Image 1 (cartoon, one colour):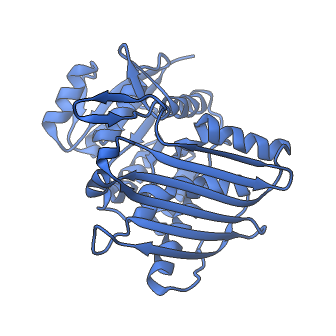
Image 2: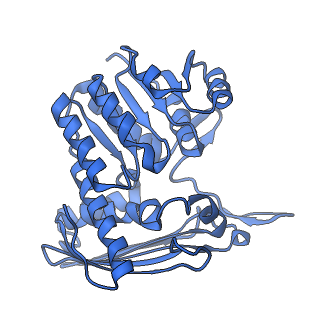
Length: 333
């Protein structure tokens, strides 16, 4: 099987993780990089021996030797390069949130269909073993069809200072929206949400969302940016799914590794993305492996769903409306 040739647009903190993971995959050749920061894209190109570097996505997309484009730009900048990449005959991975506007998410889906190419949403928790095992327990009947779900995602106050550029529903809750939609196997019928802005005048750093699905499943999503930086906890997440036949649950506040030094305590995450001895491992690499296997074999993705991602953006918009109106709201797709 020939290598999947990849181009990456957007090389911020997460886009550079994409580069590290792709670089570690023997079935992948990273052909080209693009970032508006010329110094950064050249530095990363030199570090990972990628000879073709650009500051304009249009130049990268003119190349005919790229099979898959990975887009990890700012949240509101995904649609333009994604549609252009699909129109130029390339498959596309769009980081989460796929967009902050429903019409743009729908436009990307339509462009993929129109051009006969695959488009993947960067919802990598479907590849995280604990979340995946819960899905397996639902499908196998071990816990059965979900009746109630509680999904929590907590991050630090320091991270909020960076990511408050985008509403919390798009930065944090969007992960759990995808998981809830995946587990329920249904569409959201109604939304009631509550947001509290503690450290910002507009963007809530505490967000509660109650979802009722068409099949009767209930989901309660809690996202917050309230973990003190000094706690040394990178991720403070939890899940509980109550099914007809049983319950699945877990909670984590890091990797269980504790590092104590003069600066305090840290508990790093090893699940999502980690580098060791010049290679990368974790959920991101597992997701990218699945995507590249689909591209190489020409196999339509079934484990992931861009339609689910589009619906997730519709639900996210309903959550924002509900926070503003104080009323129950209805997703528009």
